[in-house]
Amino acid sequence: MRDHSQLELLLKGYGLTTARILYHLPDHPHLLQTYVWQDYDIAPRFPVLIGFIAFWKARLEGPLHSVEYTHSRLIAPNEWRKVDGELMLH
Image (cartoon, rainbow, N blue to C red; front, side, top):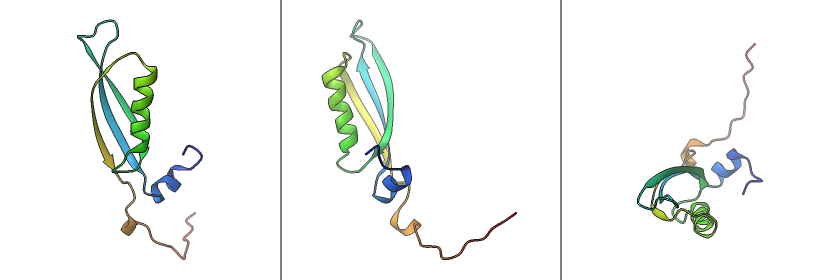
């Protein structure tokens, strides 16, 4: 996915996904730490977010407590239209 520009991703239906991840500190499991994650992802399956959570569980020490997320499509189909002209300002 990293080979595409942000505009290409938005036109393919991706939107900005933000997740707030609470996890237990490895040395102090009774304390929680917050991590904020953002990337372009596709709702409702969220393959990028799910892949990140799988990476976290496999490679990082802090056990997850909870994940809250929001998703916003930044370009909707009715917001994109073809323009036939160009206006140059000096």
